[in-house]
Length: 184
Image (cartoon, rainbow, N blue to C red):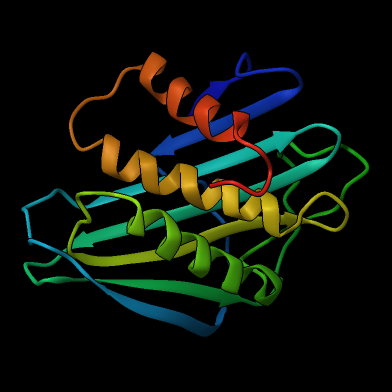
């Protein structure tokens, strides 16, 4: 896990590359969409998670697993889960109850943000991208922070194919969080 504290005023972030945080959730539904890609460039399989806190109270935890397939499309899957446990070690405010999983409330936002971000990229990887880790607060989570987390994850996926240094990670997160709340 990489902890990034100095990305701006009252903004915190944790990033996991390959070793994702453990959350136990039962998948109750899968929301999916397929995007066409221009090529099927060979990529490594990857797992990435990002946890965000942006003052005054915005919070999101989101993780992905990408599996390369030599096709001309990218299947995006959002695993909607039951709330099965509370997350106690989070960046959220201590007064916020953080639940594990991806809530139905945020799944469509995650899918829409994914489609929008990939639509703005030149190189869309082919394969299967599954959003399978999540955490949300009773008070601190909303569609905007999940759209930001989705955008950061996709930019990390596209940007971390080789070794990426800490400064590059910070720049990706900082650039996304510095955009207006509705811009991804």
